[in-house]
Length: 487
View 1 (spheres, rainbow, N blue to C red):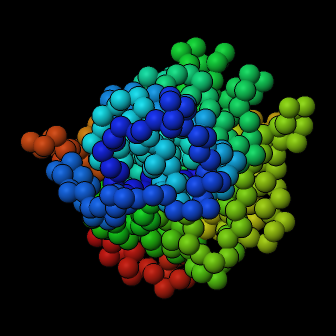
View 2: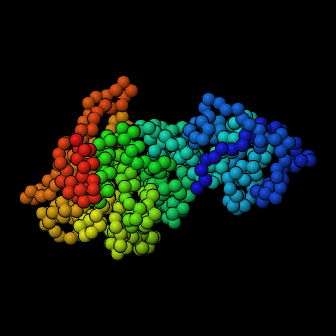
View 3: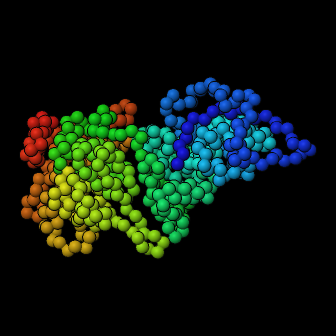
C-alpha cells in the first residue's frame, strides 16, 4: 500500500493546441513517458508553493479529508477515466509514487485544459494526490490513515465515513464514488493478505501493510452497502511511562504493572471494544526480557513486540471448500510444542481459553492475553464460559480452581465519556474460598467530577493492601519497589 506523500506543485492548466485539424491527442503511456523526461518549460516540478494556514506543519502528516473536497472530487471523476485511457496501467503499477507524480503531471494538465477545468496549483496537486491514492492506495481512506489524530475509520456505505478522532466519533468529509468503489478498495485490502471478499465470503478479517486491523462485511449481509472498519496501527510505540504522562494511569499503578510483568505474572487485560486493550498489551509486553522466547497468537497480527526472539502466529479462515481453517485453539496447541517462555494471545474469545489456562499452569509463566468484559469479575465468568465452549465436561469448581491457579492479575481498562482511555481497576486473584474465586483490588480509578474543558477529573487510588504476589516479586528482587508503589 502506498501512503500519501508530499507532491510537487503543478502548473495552472493552459489551453493545449490541437494536433492538426482537430486531430485527437496521441495516446500517452507511462512506458513512453518513462523513456524521457517530460517537457517542463515553466519549471513546475521545482516551483515552491507558498504555505497556507491550512497546511500541516513540516514533518507532520496531512490532516485528513478536507483537501479532497467537492470541487477536487468532481475534477477527479472527470479526469481519471481519460487519464487511464492514455497510460499503460501495467507499466504504471511497476513505478513508485514519486516517479508516477512526474510522469502523470503533463497528461493531467492536458486533460484539465481539454475539459476546461480551471484549478490552481494547490488544487492540481490535491487532484494528483487523489488520483494516485485511488490508483495505488486505498482511495479516500489514504488521508484518514495518514492523520495520526484518527484512531478508527468506519465506512458505512459509499457516502458516510466516520472516524474516531481524539476519542470522539465524527463524520468525515471523505466519500467514495459509489458502492463499487468501496468494493474495489475492500478487494485491494484483502488481496494483500491472501484473502477474498465476495458474495460467497461476505465477511472477512484482514490487516493493512502497517498492521492496522480491518473488518469488512458486504451485501447481502450489510444491507446499506459495504462496510469497512479499520482499527489503526499506532505509528509510535506506547509504553507505560507515556500512559502515565497522558493520564491513562497513575505512576504508582504503572509501577505495579511493570513489577507484575517483570515478575512473570500471568496477566489478563479486560475491557470493552475500543477501550485500548491491545495498546496496553503492547505496553506490558515491553517488560519482557530480550532473552525470552515469545510466541504471539492473533486473528489479525497487530502486536508490536520489540524483543528479538518473537514468533508471530496468525489464524487462517477456511477456503471456499470449507477446508484449511486454522483456529486460535490449533495455534495455542502448536505453540506449546515450540518451547515458548511466554505465550501472548491477542484476544481470548473461545475454546482456546482451556488450552491457554493449561499453558499458564504448566510452566509458561508471564503469559498475557485480552478478553472482552466490563468488570474484572465478569472477565472471570466469561473465561469460565469459554472453557465450557471447548466441549470438555469439567465441574465448575475444577474450572474455577484452574482459573485461580493460572491467572494472577486482571487489568480493567475503559474508554470513558471524555474519550480518554483509563485503567480503572487492577485486581489480583488471591485464591479460592469454597466454590468462589477470591480477589482483591489493588488500584481503582475514582471519578470526582468534570473540568471546564469536558475532561473527567478523578484519581487513581491504592487500596494499600499487601499484594499476594509479594513473595514472587521478592524472588525477582522487586518486593521493596512493589510495597513502595502500593503506599
